[in-house]
Length: 529
Image 1: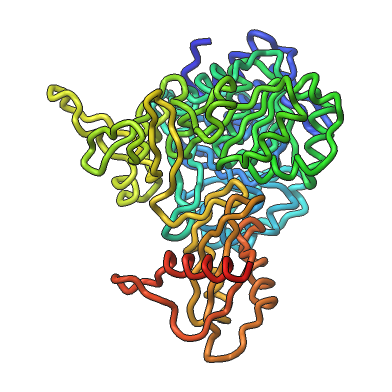
Image 2 (image 1 turned 90 degrees about the horizontal axis):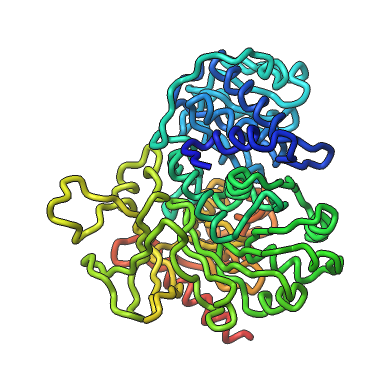
């Protein structure tokens, strides 16, 4: 299909195969025809509330059909959807609502009470749409509440004209210097990503994809876009235990599963129904390098299943993949550029690196996002004109400078070396050390603290905090962690808190030297082992 707008993916598929199943939830199936109708009705309802083109609609739900309808319906209305990870706690949700200036929030009767205290501090918020029993929720000051069913009763109406360069989504990802930052993506970015991923994964209408990752994560949302582009079926799973995943794989005869390394590691520790090997066509890894032992175990269990090892960044949706035929020869490679993208390895002066010379991974092409929402400084740092372009090109092309150091071998295959920033990659998430530190400082139990990541076989990196007690008193670590649990999602909680006396070391700029602390902690841990 020659689709150019995000919401056209399911709508066009509804014309081709209206009765085909688009979504499978725990208790229902949704056809493409039914999904298209709900998307159109939601778009009309949003327009009836006065949500204008380009305004933001935040969605705070677990994986369910209403989440999907809200995203694609918002796109059809010419507005911008902002999916919020359901694992986030009220302070993070409140930050996102305020930062993006959300006009409308879609949530459930179960989740709204969890964040109700934040709504009064969101001056742009005018409407809340509630999935479930809307009558049971007392409306907040200045905010009108609406039931989901009532919103979908609006008749179709004229909607704003939308073109492919219009922004359609803001995906929030952790930054190295504080709270999450919003990556702005256009219709073109997301549709080009769907077509590219579906091409190399060879998705078809016969596929069934298991959506195990959060839809707030670019790779998680990609399960919807690639499926809708090809007419495949998506099974929505809110799992608690790894066994829930394997049972869903078998029950739904899933053909494609994309996951992050910690989940793959957990899946290798449970028994798999033997039938999975007969229908699981591919597995795909994202969000960090899969351990060799885990990959070997998965291939042993799934001898006919193709493994795709991928690398991506939210700022450009997806960047590289390693073809299954290369996994035996290059298991430590992140592969080559995905279709319709070019990956460069550049020196600081913008010139290309020689084979095997370390440099910065730079992504150019249709998947390059529109920058960071409301953050000109960070946008200018990561989204930059490519140096050395044709002299006659008056308007420079903007690429994403990832901040990741890689090398490219003589055959063009890429290998990840490390990150330039201090981000912690744990459980498939990028975690800001500053955000962890802010939560710890808010307890008033420490004088100084620093968070950093250390290698961990299951998590990729585990979060370690070095802290000094407040006012010379003993630090109650259990009490500290208990307070942190109220403010941080589970994946952001420190795995270990190390108490240190005196001041923490500083770098030449006077800032706490996380790198020195990480090296010191690693040396102590090595000596103790």
